[in-house]
Length: 259
Image 1 (tube, helix red, strand yellow):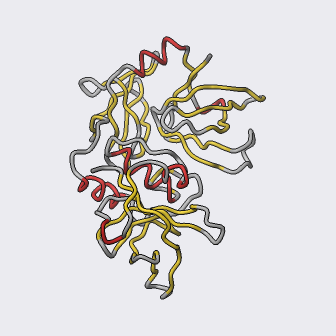
Image 2 (cartoon, rainbow, N blue to C red):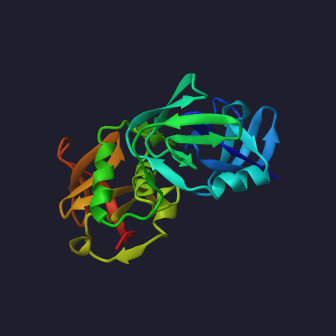
């Protein structure tokens, strides 16, 4: 079996092996995956972080054998913490890294992927669970005004569940990729009055399917990706958008991920 790692800023993952196919998620620099099929110049992959499956262009990654993947996976993992930072590749070329990228085996500002050396002198932290819910809120604010992008996971384009997933990744907590999957994680909170800042809120459509999620800031406000990452009012009915003077999402479920 072959594995792989993203060695560019971001790889689009598509539903079918075609550049014109829908993008369903993204792989950020340093994130690992398993290759499960090949079609022409496309790889069908399963992502290590959230087990998501999709197709990527074979030109946009490095393949690893099992031993190489295991060596990387066992190395200490740090996560980049600023919106965009740079690494120097083999002392010559610059590569921008998006917030939430993976740095395996970082030591004295240096790490390697196979035979390539990267120099990183930016902000990162060990991938370990946050000690305070305040970190969730602080990380959520980093994405404010990021444009909505279906399948996106970066400050240059992100969807609702990509937003919540990345905020919690920065806090050392893995979440599933889609909103309905995330709704199966954590502890259920029965009332909005019992919810705490950092809790995840989930919203349903007319068919009772969970189709949206966001992060509670306080008893009356939520931060979520809808058009852009924005702050709106929240109550027991759902999200109220003051700009259009209307409810936009119906509240279904509240989950506590960090106690």
